Image (tube, rainbow, N blue to C red):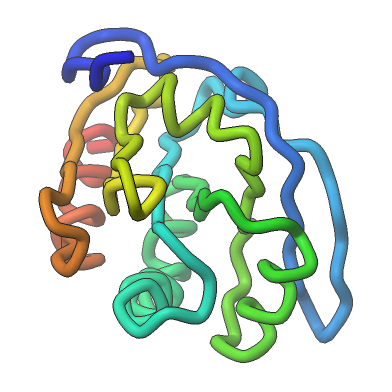
Length: 159
């Protein structure tokens, strides 16, 4: 599938995910359509506990309170299973949900699949109305948008 354009409705999905808070793992189903009314940041990353993915998600964790203060939800999405996500979240002290797209259906719906590595490192900001408002698609997977850049995009949606 092609990458959704800014201004289009974001492809809806439901994925299993988990979050570790206060040392306790909680599994749940995460449904994008249930987030209407608040901005959502989808951070697609190739793999748990890899150097660049760790740097990326840790940078978003460092800004998580500011995202939350703007009413935004942050979800990390990769093809690994929930047990892998749990180990990664614990090791990196991540306190936002990590979703498991083992079948690759959401990766394909967002057009970010990449032969050999599974997916392109990508970030999508979805407005409270469910419309894609900003995106960053990595070409080689080593670069990612800074948390400050994403926060500025969210701020434009809520101000």
